[in-house]
Length: 269
Image 1 (spheres, rainbow, N blue to C red):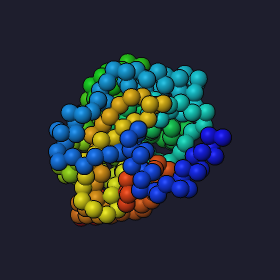
Image 2 (cartoon, one colour):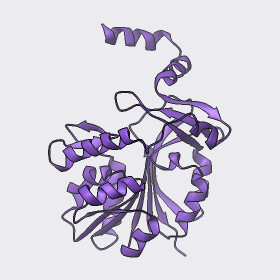
Image 3 (cartoon, rainbow, N blue to C red):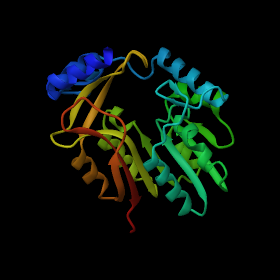
Image 4 (tube, rainbow, N blue to C red):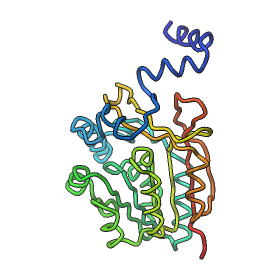
């Protein structure tokens, strides 16, 4: 009965109205003139409740009680990002069977646990997460192993590891000044960069929104950028060549927007 009602709603309500209604409950909404104005209406990722939900879910994965975690939700099967897997495989193959990943904003190792079975057997495999201090402290205490490591900042990680590929998975949109941040990253000369699960505007100017997380995950509201796809790509293509791009499985309730994945290789000098 519920499924029939949902089908009728989708059939008779225009898509743009349906998306607007959805945004009242979860998803992306608003068009804020500044990051600070959006942030004042939000609860951040540093919430203790969110942190504990993520930690407890990933502990189940680490201890073999669950197969996969994303955004604190556990699953009985792994939802692979095959573009990301392909990028990691290419990086390993072109670096003499060695894979050193810097996973910026990588939580307590979600992407590591997602992909480790494919790479734990190679000659040299390190997955380095750079995160907020309370995530790093818990990561070093509870989750670190021979392959998974946690760092408080990018430079410390680079001082200890020869990083070959940078992973930005569902993180760039939550940084207050994403273009300034990317310019700083370009100075590090990573051989490869993956931008995964990034919501982008296919048309229109950059937009600051508020993202409401579905209550079934946890109650939270984040300031979130919807960057113009062409503008973002133009800023990166000055330094990197685009190897491939594609849409991801996520959906978004904003017109002319989509989640994308990109894989870049540093230009030859």
